[in-house]
Length: 292
Image (cartoon, rainbow, N blue to C red; front, side, top):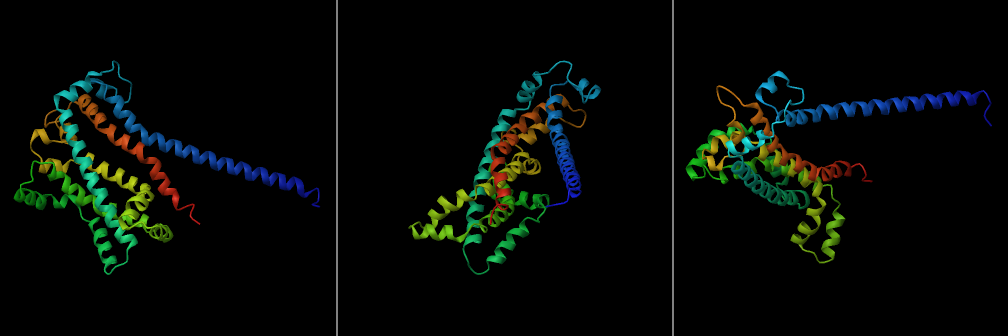
């Protein structure tokens, strides 16, 4: 039995520990709240400013619009043919994404689950591809596209997009698939499942968190790319959204209301893709914390 004098000391110590833990948790939540506000405010400012006129944009950049200019969206959509550009961006992004996922998942499965000679060298080759500056390849790619007759076509964007997205995609998927226990594959082979069945029915569903990460990273790059589209596409009927948005600014003036309205329209698909796959990404990030 503890002395009576020790009990108040323990009570004071417990109160100090509780107050310190509460203060620490409160400080953490305050920091996270401020970080969330700082992160989301640019998006809020973009949407808010898209309803302003040019005069309001300069006179009251952080205030509410005096009159909400919904016509900015209609004018932006019609004046720069955003409907056609939006469709072109959807086609290029989705086809590039499908090719990236298909090729990278196959390559990652082979590199992560099958033993063969020179596997480490091949994986290193893909990792080195992540270090190549994309913009340094514009001139040789332009010459190549011109020689093979792919300029001013969807493939002029789809092929480079896929090629530059593959190193990162293969690296992410290989690292994830390598952590899957071998017993899962062995049980499938015992049940009579063949190689393709194991890949499509087991490994691909298991790697959904890593695939979601690849989808988000790749789609953001495809959708927002400006340099490749500017160099490889000159036909107005094939221009993507970044090129369409650039039409609102020239060397003399910029219509900020229309520009921000067009940017808001262009941001919607990227936010939708992130919200659709963020749960799988979070599962992939926390999966390693629960493995025993």
